[in-house]
Image 1 (cartoon, rainbow, N blue to C red):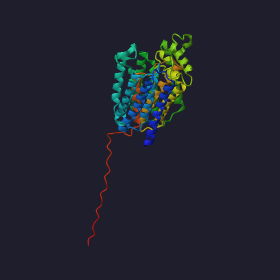
Image 2: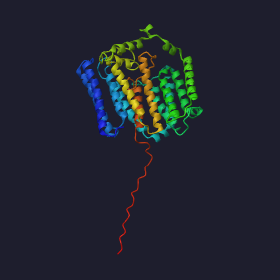
Image 3: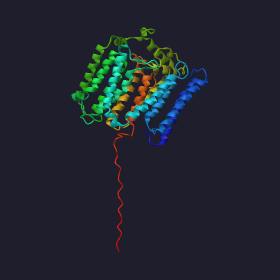
Image 4: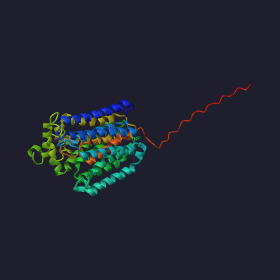
Length: 433
């Protein structure tokens, strides 16, 4: 949070200059039919910046790091998505970005009161069950999307913030318990482990193993908070046992993994560059051809490949904007997440929320970038804020709202602070003659 107006207006200027520099690159190096296309994009992006800052000022929320991060990244993604295959305006992506702003405010208003939020734990379990049933009934083994005609939704994306809140409220209730590693951890958190197992089984059945590491990372960070935050006494034997148990679980997972997963892990994409390895070969070629500074916005050819603006968006940015711009975008997200981690949390509950949200963002970015660079097979996971996708954008906005709530000065609105009574003035006794 920022205590003075100088830092506030300084951040506004920094964000405006960042977006103006991207628009200048489009103007001088972009592939556009008319200058009015660039002018329209510039007017919408910069106008959105100014409107959002004014709204924050009117709502007296002009001191939160998360808000500046959100407007910086979302409008940056609007610029990127508007240039793939030629400069224009990605209207649908812009609407999803506005929706992410709205979801951020909703999450902030719902979770800024820490005490009230922790009391809503039964509601989180109900939402968890409803989302799991929606995946089971409406998608199932047929896929992971719900088609409503005008929009397609991915229930597993909305499950992420619910799972973060569920883990945070459950683990923060054990704040005063002994910080140790043993059977007591499993006994106290059997419901968290149970929900994690249900997610694993359902994702396995739906063949959506790409998002599975995200949920496991949230549960793992929750357990780390339970064991190690703020201090813990860990013996070498327990740490060795934990590592051995993790290795055994990994070996079992590899053994029981479906055949198609093992084939993708051991496949050589260059043996069939026009068949099964087509996407990854094109993604690697695009990164190499883009170089440090790229071909220019709208000058690339990777947009003709399927999922160029979602699964392999990192390669698309590298081709058109250059590896330098792609790395700057990723490091910007990481810098914001590190800022949220290094800020002193107001409570044990807020520490659990921050760790869970950061785990979601970091794991998703890692899976997407590693898939684009052929270090792992494609997982179908998006880069938060950058990739196109309505469910992903709305979920990312809601998660940023949770980060914003951890910075809120309001801890419990129901606590009434007693007013200090002014001491009664002692009347001076008049001296009797």
